[in-house]
Length: 522
Image (cartoon, rainbow, N blue to C red):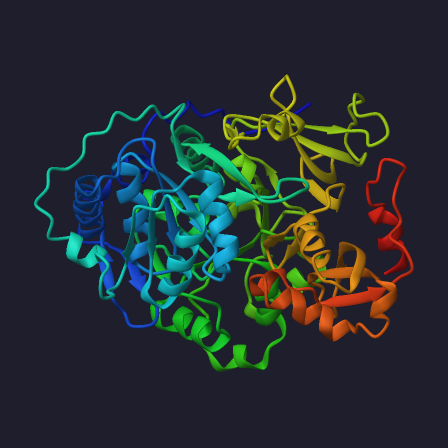
């Protein structure tokens, strides 16, 4: 068993809005959130006051403890206000990909029985359609403004009393992001107030922040990585978060230059752009002090090329998963220069790890031996919503969460993730479940069978690669038709990027797809 070299932290038994904004009065007029596109700024005092007023308005509208509110929005300065307002009103927040189709959104709404939606006007049509398909949605609010819908801006004028909800941090769910886990369709991950808040405290010794620090939030808040690293963690410590709604390289570089960004939390495709794109040379990025990459594996040579070009310490990595609130490992900010290339870091405070044999899961392995990574700690999720069997398959009786990732630890405690035993595809940090795409492909009248695996494109990104068996009457079915069929029905990041036609999908006697055989062909 491997244990963290950091001292354990006590459980943080606070509602997440208190754990994050508890020092807002101390930070007062310090900028908390800045819109990187138009400069709109909210101070800590405003974020605290605004989220309390919106919470009052939500409670007056009928939001109560035990409700689920769907937050369906790109990054904006209103996103954190909506999130903390909902939790203060007693709701659990299920975050929704802003590019989700109405059908995908409706599945999530129905699964978690969400009664409320907060969205933005450009996404209102999708939200309305999703609400119609799912049923049970009582009201749709907007962050900006739209005819016929109550706005968070209008809610700031609410005179309703601030809700006083009795939150049990150990049991009550604060966030309900959807994850496919190690396999299968997306499932609601129940993260309690205590789990998220304690994970922030666990990360703090390795990833400190303070007033004067400026981080750029281009990774989405709806993703657990963005929710933690770019929203909860910096706002807990008085840093300033500059918010961008999407990744546009020009806008991204301009924001670093204009706002004198000190820290970046990114995914590998952004590291690639910083390392190789000619536009980078046109901007002053001298304010940067560090870069951390997570959400997907980062090639060590690419990391080195990025840090060398920008004159920074080596790009640090971090490791975790939605089911772990999400962090377990990080390269500490003060140890980036000494960390070996390719490592995803060391265990954070209060976290234990085992590496177990792939051939004999009961056998623990030592330093230098590769096996499946198991994690135990206060950040392990409460479970999958409504899926006790899936929870039991993920977390064993002794509390060890089986990550499905293969890794090894060196003698100094640095973890290296080398492979995945799980089937999940990580496209630019976003989760893509092969089972979901396979089910969709099988609805095409010209497809008899299909399997989807992850394959790497020329830029090193993992992309969905479909192996398709044509029906006899569909001999002329083309690669383009298959890709278009999927593209019309899923969010852009889930699209099939490659298609190979085969005579039959390799399967075990149990019917399970033998993906390793397909990987050997690709």
